[in-house]
Image 1 (cartoon, rainbow, N blue to C red):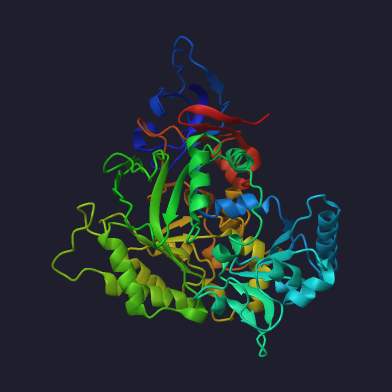
Image 2: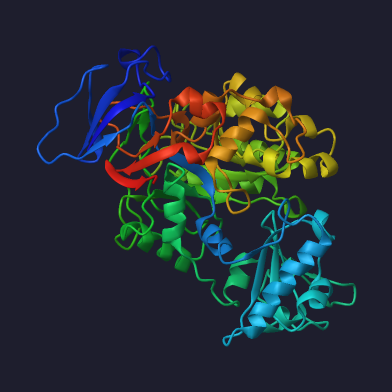
Length: 537
C-alpha cells in the first residue's frame, strides 16, 4: 500500500520540525509486510511498485492508530442490545418509565419472551431504584437495570425469581459463599433487588445477550481505533474465549490486550522498551495466551478492583501486588475515590523492593522497569496535589477518562465532595508534574468514541456548558497523545517512523484543523497491518 500526499506526525526532527510535530511538506508513505517501510522525501513522489495499491491522503494527517487504554468490550457489545436509561438521553422519570415500558411490551409480544436489560441509569433520572419500583414499570417481565458506574444491578421481582432468589425473606437458591454480602436486603431479610459487584454470579444465571463484536470493531475502525485494552475484572472464561476467537478470526480487527484476573498472573509477560521516537521494541516474541491464541491478543496487567465499602488492608493489598510482580506482571488498580488512591499508593510502596536490589521475576527483570512505568492507576478520578506527588515518586502511570467531565460533569458538581471538585480527572497538572498519563473511554460506562474524550480534555465543559477544572485543560496535541501510546507503555505516544507497525489512522484534514474540533467524522481511513481496514464513503 502506498499512501500519497500525507501530512505525517513526525517521529524525529529528521522528518519534521521536531518530535510530535506534523511535517509541513506532504510525503508518500509505503506500507508493506505490516510495517512502514519507506517515507518519501517531502514534496517528491515515490515510484509505485507493480501491483501496489495507492491511497491518496490529499493532505490529510496520517497518525498512528488510536488505542483505547481502558474499556470493557463484552459489556460494550451487550450495550448495543440494551435499553439506555441514563442522562442526557433520559433526563426524567417520565422518559425512564416510557423506555422501560416499551421494552417490556416488546418482550411480552415476542414469541420467545425475554428479559429487559437497561444500562446507564443514574438516580438523578428517577431516584434510587429497587425491585418494587421496577415491578411498577415492567410487571412480570424479568428486568435488570445497571447503574452507570457498573457496580450495581437492580432486578425486579420476576428477575429475582429467575436467578434463584426468592423475593421473600431468606437466602434463596444458588447463593454461594461470599455472594450473600452483595445482595442487599431489608431489615427483615427481604431482597431489595439491588446486587453489588455480582456480575459473574449474575451472568451465569441470566440469558446471554447476543453480542456483535464485528459491529463493535467496525464502529471503532471508523473512529481510527486500531487497539483496545480490555479492563474487565474477573472476566468469565467464556468471554475471554469469545474475544480471542473474534481476534483470531479477524471479526474483531483491532489488537487486543486483556487485563488479567487474579487467576491469570502466571501468564508470562516480556517487557519491552520505547525508543525516543515512541516506537515499541519488544523484549521478545509477543506472548501468546493459552489455547493457541494469536500474538495479536496479549496479556496485560493484573486488574485489581477496590470498593470504599470493603477496602482491603494495605498490607494485604501489598501482598497481591508483590505476588503479581514475582510473576513479572504489573498491576492496574481501580481508583475512583481519594481513599482508594491512598490505600493503593500505600500498598504499592510497601510492595516495592527494598534498597539494594530488586528481586528477579519470571522474565528476569525487576518488577519495575526503569523508564517504563509498569503499574497503573485506573481512572484516577480524584488526585489532589499531595497524592500526585506520591504517584510521581512511585513512577506510576495514570489511565484517566476525560470524557467523564463532558458526560457526567453536572452530576459531579451536584454530588461530589466540594473538596474533591478541583481534582476530578486531572490531566494538565499530572503532565506538568512529570507523571505518565494515558486515557481510555471506559466504554460502555463512557462513550466509546475517543475523539469525544480528546475534545473533553481540551475544553472540560459539562453537558450544561459549565467549565469544570479550567486549570486541567490541555492542548489538542497533548489530548490526542493520550490515545496514541502502546498498550504496554500507554503514556509513550507513538509517531510515524520506519519499521513501526502499520496500524494507522488517516484524517481528512491536516492535524491542526482536526484538533480545532476533534471528531471521528474526520477519519478518512484506518489501516491494520498496512492493509486498508476502513475507508469513509
